[in-house]
Amino acid sequence: MDRIPILKFGHFLLVTIQVDMYDRLALNLENDLVNAVSKHEARGVLIDISAVSIVDSFMGRIIGNIATMSRIMDAETVVVGMQPAVAITLVELGLPLAGVHTALNVEKGMALLQEKIGLNAHSDAARAEEDDDDQPE
Amino acid sequence: MTMISLNKETLKIGTEQDVILFRQRLKEYATKIGMSLLNQTKLITASSELVRNILVYAKKGEVLIEVVSDRLQTGIRVTFKDQGPGIADVQKALQDGYSTGKSLGLGLPGAKRLVNFFDIQSTPGHGTTVTIIRWKR
Image 1 (cartoon, rainbow over the protein chains, first blue to last red):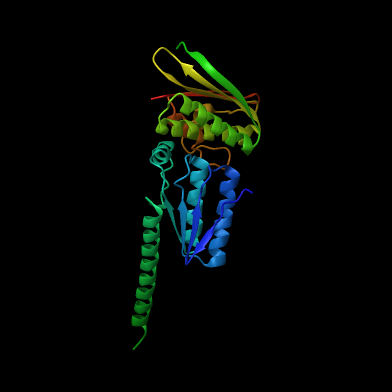
Image 2 (image 1 turned 180 degrees about the vertical axis):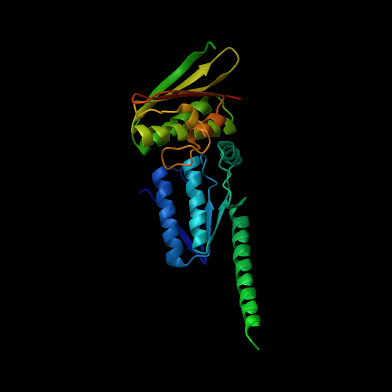
């Protein structure tokens, strides 16, 4: 099957890509992840690519798409574990993955997601307080 | 540049399964000659871009993997050949961000940046041949 499993973990969705990517697989992942964000009302998506040895412009674009689509649906995406050779190659290819959060490993990626969501919750609360202030006395 | 071809193999490209097999074979060749991991990653990423162009624009074609050597160095030469529609303006196609398809337009210029030698011959209506070389070091 051309599918990568998506695990639900609290408010987050976890994806570990253990095989080399090809276009069909990447497209299915994009579709499945966006649906899963909606279904589980996820606040964060963590994608572990430590076992991926090749990321070309197509797969890079899919990763960017996932981050953008998730953000529109109020979820943050963190890509973790990129191999150094893949990072160097991506930049030379001309695809620096701007707008995608990254972390060195799963642990740091989870911490980053928690921080992002914590901050959002805080700013929501702050906004609500400001709204209260606007109420006429 | 006088160059001798030491070992070679031709693979047909028509499906994504062929692409996966091609990338694996290419990795085997690169590993066998002792190419560094970074150069392997660059070579396979560039090849992934070029082989996608065959599938997207020409639907089918073939690739030739060769171990080549001049007097100074050893490397891998890959030739991508198709009888597809060809490219009307090769200079334009080599510019970042130019695409007649739906891609980011990084494929050709990105692939060129990742290899040591890059040559493209294209005749509209007759097809395209791209040749790349990545030296071992």
